[in-house]
Length: 316
Ligand SMILES: C[S@@+](CC[C@H](N)C(=O)[O-])C[C@H]1O[C@@H](n2cnc3c(N)ncnc32)[C@H](O)[C@@H]1O
Image 1 (cartoon, rainbow, N blue to C red):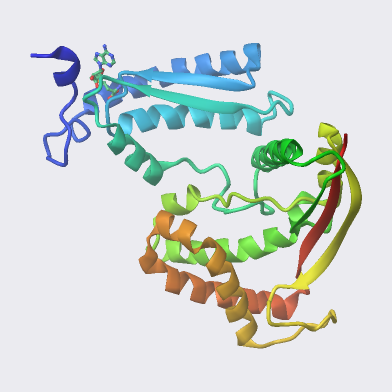
Image 2 (cartoon, protein in one colour):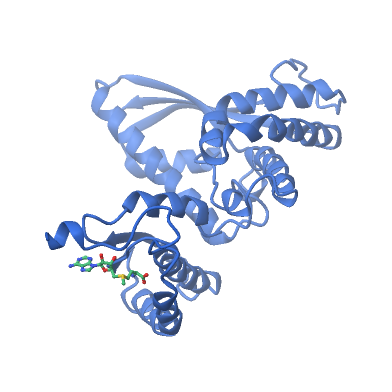
């Protein structure tokens, strides 16, 4: 017998596997929850770590390790929600440790199904997004944009120029961005599928779009903070949601085709992401509903994309 290889909990789909027979251990976890809660609070408030590292030693497979992970996250979310840490942002890292024979792939599969809900069923920044999640989006933008600019700095010669065109936000209010309106209508379509049992609630709750529409002020602030580029030109122009609508007026128009056109252009961008998260089978239904939601919105509200044009020159 080789202990490291052979000593792991029963894996596989059988009824006798560990995941289906670990209620005893679950009861121990539930009993320990107040102490875990206390430990997490103490670490958060005393150490104020920029990154909190958490390890589950002997995590095995099944719902228990996910219960542990979600208990830690919900304690931290509770602390953030009550603003006990001020605006202190925190990144979380989990190490799931066990012997090599443990089925780590199964944990990852289960995790995808059971991710905890931080963004209230939204898929991007929306009116009901908690401030802590808005901050995560903003920090991520700051981090990604800074890294992008630093890497381009290495590639350009002094005096070299770089022209960027990307989606942004007209108003400074982060909750009132054009992308927020667009994504809220997609979230609404997803929520209706959840209500009808066609998509699992957990699938929606674990889906957040990896993008951010910055304001001109936010873009200028990142460029200034790294100090490697001068801004030669920055402007924001607007473009109709419907890519086939070239009218430049601000009138409200009605035609179901506009919803369909918008839905098609958004599907072309997000289909691979949505298909891997929800499964391909649901996409036709999802985008039909989305097209209807968009059309309803366009009849009521004048909404446009905001596109930022940024010309940078590399400092010497
Ligand atoms: C009874 S299970 C508990 C699993 C899980 N924490 C729970 O609450 O359901 C104990 C786990 O510890 C793991 N284990 C035992 N010795 C270990 C070692 N030396 N290093 C890492 N994991 C170990 C086993 O493989 C097993 O998955």
